[in-house]
Every structure is written in C-alpha cells, then in structure tokens.
Length: 253
Length: 381
Image (cartoon, rainbow over all chains, first blue to last red; front, side, top):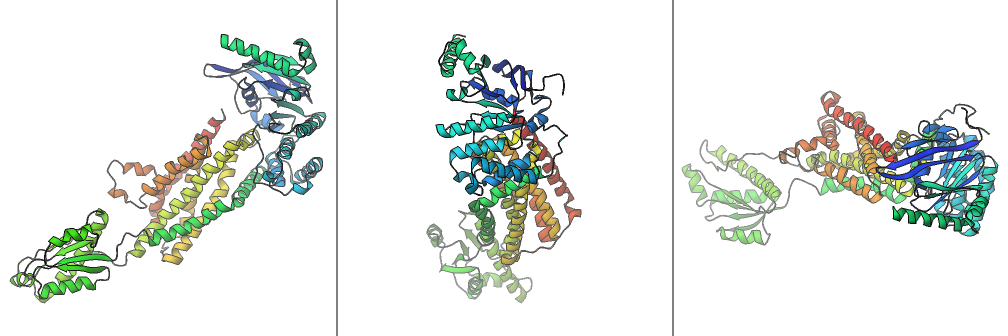
C-alpha cells in the first residue's frame, strides 16, 4: 500500500460527476475509517445514488478521485469490486432459488472455496436462525428475513467495505432493529459499513453521517455534533432544515 | 483478516456458480420449460400437416356445350383424378359466376363445342380454364394441376392418331405427385431456425432484462464477475437447451414425416450451435438496449422472430420477394442457416459446398458477440 493511512477505508477527494451540463455530484470530499458505520443521507435526487455508483465502480467519475479499500475506483475498479460488498436498494437475491443456492451462488462468484461456502452457510444459518428455511425458495420467506439474508450474503466474502443502499425499505421497526444489530456486529469485526437511508432514526445509529443537498455535502460529523451545530433535537430536524435551505437556494438560482 | 494476503486467483467456480444459477432458473420455471419443449413438437405437426403448399379436394366445374365421345372421356378423366371432385356439369358458362360466388367450385373447365369433330378435322380445340382467383397462389397451383391432366389426355389422344388431334392450351409445368412430404421437408429446416431463434434470442433477452428490472444485474456487475462472464453464464444454459430442442425437432420430423437426413448429422448440429450463438448474441443485444422485460420481448419478437419467419425464405421464397427486399434478407441469419440445413438434410452436401454460408454465420456471430459485450459495457455508465 502507498502512503495513505491504512485505517482509511474510503477516501474521497473532489469527486464529481456531470451528465451533460447537469452536475449530479459536485466535488464531494470525505473519509471513512475502517470499521466505521457511515450514514450517507440526502433527499431523493441529491446525488447519493450517483456517488455510490462511482464508489462501487459502476460509474466513472468526471473529476476528482476516490479510493475504496485502498484501490482507486477509476483505475483499479476490478480490485475495488473484489474487496467490497453491495446490497442494492432493490432486493438483490434470486427469489426462485433457495436460501442455500443463493449463498452458494454469491460465494462462488466471489471465489470462495466449497469448504468456505459450507462453513459460511452454517454460520449464517445459525446467526439468522434459518434452519428450517435453508432449502426453501427465497420468495417464501418473510421480507424482514430476506433483508437480513441479503445483508449476510453481501458480507459473505468478508469484504473490507460494504455498501448498503437503503437496505431497510418497507421493513417493520423490530426487524430494522435486528438489521442494525447485524450491521454493528459486522462493523465490530472490522468491515466498514457505508449506508444510505431514508429513516432519520437510523441516522442516529451511525458513527458519523453526511448530508447531501444538490450534489454537495453540506454537513458532516457525528449525530451529536450535527445536532449541536444546528441546535436541533434530532437528525431529522437537521436534515429538514438543510434540505429546505437547499431547495430555496435551488429555486432561487 | 486481510483479503490482500495473496493475489487472488479466479477459480473456475466463479463462472460455474453463475451457470448453475442460470440452470436453476430454467429448470424451476416449469411452465416456460414445458412450453419451450412442447412448442417445437406442436409446430412440427402444424407445419407438416397444415402448412402444405399442395392442394387437394379441388372442386371442378365442367362446361360442356355439346357432349360427345371425347368430352365425356375428358370429364371421366377429371373425375377419376384423386384430387379433383366434379361438382357441376352444365352446358353454359353462365353458371360459373354463381358457383364461384357461392364458393362451390375452385375452377371451371370450359370445353369447346363439337370437341370430337374439331379434333377429327385436326383443328385446335381451345379449352378455357377459369379460376376463382381470390387466392391467387392457390388459383395458380390449381391451374397447373388441371393443365397436367389435360396434357396427359392430349398425349393419350395423340397416341391414337399421330400428328393429329391436339388439345392446345400451352402446358408449361409438370407436377410431381405426392408433394406432401416435400413441403414438410422444406419446412423442417426453417422450423429449426424459428425454434432456435425463439429459445435463444427471445428467452435470453427476457431473462437478462428480468435481472435488469429486478436489480440483480447491478449486484452482479458490482461483483468480480466480468461483463463477458455474465454474458457467457447467461448464454451457455440456453445453448444447451437449444441443442436439445434441435435434436427433438429432428427426431420428430424423422419419425412423423420421414424427413430425410442425407448429410452429416454432426455437421448439422454444429451449424445449429453456430446459429444459436448468433441468435443468443442478438438476444443479449436486445436486452442491453431495452429497459424492461416487456420492451425486450417486443424487441426480440420484431427484431429476430419476424425476420426469421418472414424474410428467411422459410415460408416465402426469397426469389418471389420484391427486388428491393431481396438484398435485405442477406442480413437475416436464418436465411443462411436454412440454406445450410436444407443442403445437409435434403441434398446431403457437406461443408465443401456450405463454407460460404458457414463463414457468413461465423462472421455474424463474432460481430454480434463483440457488439453485445460492448453494449453491456456502455450500459454501465
């Protein structure tokens, strides 16, 4: 590894993406430490998805640079892909395959050996208590379990960083709680968690959050710092104030 | 735990895991699989029995103003032909219009007056054939049949008296009998092309665009799988399915219609695989350019199925197409495959006569594969 600090999982410097004349992501800069749970917030259309797509190697940056797990996203996309996990906004398991087949598929794609896949499957089933459903098709298990399963599959290969794009959409509060417990366990084991969410109570669970408005990061810090800075009771209040300011500025421009 | 402890090798299981998953998809979807396997069989039967270019049970009306020995002989001759029925005999042409309007006759044979007398004098006896041309193709075929009966009759009379009695109506063509099998023979190669297009282009387009729609494709693209590996993983199971279906159609054609296989089965199967690759690439291309399953399905139908059915020479001969359309058929892969399949099955010729068509298909496969992989890359941004 080069001169960067080894405990930096994500280093973003002036990252920009333009589509024609529209700047979706405007020179964002931030770092995420290893094992950190980083909340990436922003209203719809603020540029979150575009930013994530650049970080996971699906989109090339127009300007600036980003390193994920120590690799440059523009020039070393293949190495980035090998070292990250990704759970998309849309459900990412195959519903017509069984739980076991899904695990085997992703294990195989990420190059795990048969023995490793077998071991991980057992661990995963124990942790999620899926013993009875291991050979059931995914479409037949409840949504909450599907989400937890999707997360566990995304970190099956022990990635250095896992990107979660609105992972808890449509899930009841209790399952969301359990989901966050999984996230903490994973982060405690050293995997960096980069998560976007619409639920502001979830933002409070993060070690640090950034708030994006109109392609820029307008606030960045721990939930406590942000609340103090904006004299707000909750992150929700902070978010609404920033997003509204952005909208006013946007419509005035 | 560090994942960079050694340079990771890409184990063969990466692609294997993906192909296994694809096979699961195909085998799980029982309904689609059943349709894919049964449809070719139904089509063989339909094409073989229903889509005949030969015509039987023709209803013939005869107009005989002055019945005599010769005209009676001709009438019984027409009646004795297995594919004709004599539905009406009258002495005036006035009835013809009514018969056609009521759809009671397909053709009217109008004999001259004093048939025997004219022939006896050595004059030309004009026989008029009137067809119901509301279906021009059928009408032409029927005329040809009747002409061939008249021509036999002419020869029979002429045999009696050298150089004399002629029934001159300018007979041009001669039909070989029992053409039922012939049409099945011609259709089976086209049918293979059609079914392979369906399985490979349509099914690949649908399955790939489904992953796009569900969002699973995005997850695959973020994984270490390369775009070409995703394409290969998608394509290989359908290649196997297409191969199985080709064998099925060939067996059915042989068992039910005794369609000949004069050339090498191995060569035909190899050419089928080549054609399947072309179709699969088209399917991938369609899926890459469309954003929903529905659009992909329509795209595949219009872009691959229709040209295969209409412009390949499978049903409509290319030579009878308008001049400007004929060059267009050259870009239809099925056109070349049908030439190859007919050549191998019906003429028993080998690669030495088919290398040109094979080279064209191989070129198309290469070009389309490159384009498909490219369009996949382009789609990432």
